[in-house]
Length: 239
Ligand SMILES: NC(=O)c1ccc[n+]([C@@H]2O[C@H](COP(=O)([O-])OP(=O)(O)OC[C@H]3O[C@@H](n4cnc5c(N)ncnc54)[C@H](OP(=O)(O)O)[C@@H]3O)[C@@H](O)[C@H]2O)c1
Figure (cartoon, rainbow, N blue to C red):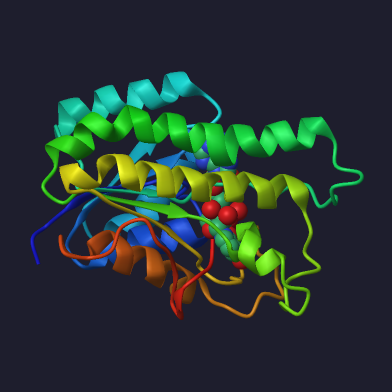
């Protein structure tokens, strides 16, 4: 497989750290983002044993950091073959009757506006790359199809701020996939499953290895592969 240069956001911990590790172990150059430079350096030390891993500072809530990251990557590599929009927050557990607008705004700032802004900033680098893959790490909780089924096991997880920010991310995925299809881009959303991390909680059934696998598979998939889909290890997820 040709060596690729891939940017993974939120690589300091959780699924993003594992995605970085798996891609580097397969011989790819992986830029992982951290918003805290000190923590990022610690992670860099840890992950460097797996291959060519590099740190880049990005805070999804700070558009200036997206432009600075673009300039740094432009100078260092001049291209990206893949982008995995993994970083996100889930810090509010209120339902729609009680959620505050501040909580909604904070989740949209990070999980939606931040991802749209960063992706737009990286497009010139992705256009310059040979592979042209974008993976948006979403969640089944953002699926309107599944949330509409009362019998769905996670139907009671009715957190409006997080869930709706990921529904918006799903629309960004479909919409961008349509716009960039003719340029050869493959742009998909993935559902990692319920994974044991800070965000997923201690009781989650899945490991980070399992959670990372679908993003790794999707970003490396060849030029004839799917675009505009919502995928999990079990197949296609309804939007
Ligand atoms: N775990 C699950 O069960 C589960 C299920 C479905 C979907 N997901 C999705 O999987 C992805 C990874 O989640 P995870 O479970 O690995 O969560 P996690 O362990 O909490 O890691 C989240 C990552 O996002 C970064 N991040 C948060 N806010 C940021 C910001 N403003 N700018 C830049 N980076 C930011 C964090 O950086 P810091 O280290 O600086 O905090 C961290 O590296 C997310 O998109 C999540 O929605 C997870």
